[in-house]
Length: 379
Ligand SMILES: C[S@@+](CC[C@H](N)C(=O)[O-])C[C@H]1O[C@@H](n2cnc3c(N)ncnc32)[C@H](O)[C@@H]1O
Image (cartoon, rainbow, N blue to C red):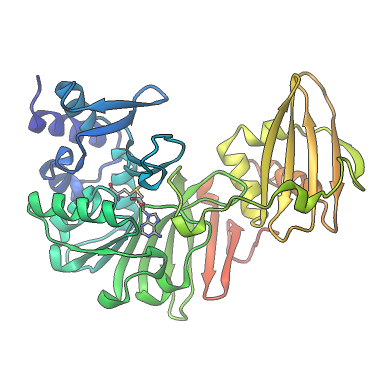
């Protein structure tokens, strides 16, 4: 059985070879024992599914997974006792993502850093190893997760400030920060993060628009209290507790029988073709920040439902495999499918731009997404 040190050295080699791990972070990744931040029982995504792993039953697999380049779920359903395991709510992120986000953060000794989403405490330990305990604060919303992380950090010899609270409010006590890194995803970047990061400072965070897809944004804070920057890479993080959104019941949109007062039309764009691609959905989602979808299987096809958060409009599109045109129904003041199709067409016409051609500008009043240039706002 390989030792933790051997496995950690192998992880450093793998991450270096893939060019995810930058030289400045090698000493920290080589020194911080990732396994010391993992619970005795976790769920690892080894082959496309989260499988349980228990240290007492299979210590060799447990240690191997602790240093494998996979995300590890450490809590389900906000820690609910009933064992449903519906939604993963805390984890140790995939090492590749951890080190790539640290590279995006572009931090160096002397920087004061705030982390949002302490989780296991592993990322906070890396930051503390590099910057020193007095320079790192980390905020976790779940009290149980917070106290486990705090103990694990102490036991491993790291003492950053660990706060239990809502990270969307930042942590004003230790502000201003040179760098702010979130390891939990958001729909919108909170204004508190802008005010707590110094001008010229950098904010790195996963963003998950309501419609779907997700990516890491790297924002630089300006002198005027706004922040702007591009996306760097795709991501699929768990969502900030306060920004989860279930949507309104269908009856609130369509009180009677389908198709209600909807207008019928036809489209040649298969919604499945948009939804299948993380990037194509993300590109549409940035242009339609207040639209979400649900899907219903029926017979051999699937109905896509689009809704707006203001609960004024809905649309359905029936995707049937092998068909070349698809029935559309739209109701309300907005034509939601027309908006989605237009956003998708703009993405294809622009040459299917990748994440790094998109960006965000955040002001205290809200955020706007753009393509190539902050002036080229997505509508
Ligand atoms: C992907 S995990 C963080 C991984 C962690 N950085 C690590 O190194 O293990 C996301 C964490 O964000 C936490 N979270 C969710 N909403 C939050 C909020 N509003 N404020 C702070 N933390 C939050 C979750 O409870 C979860 O522990």
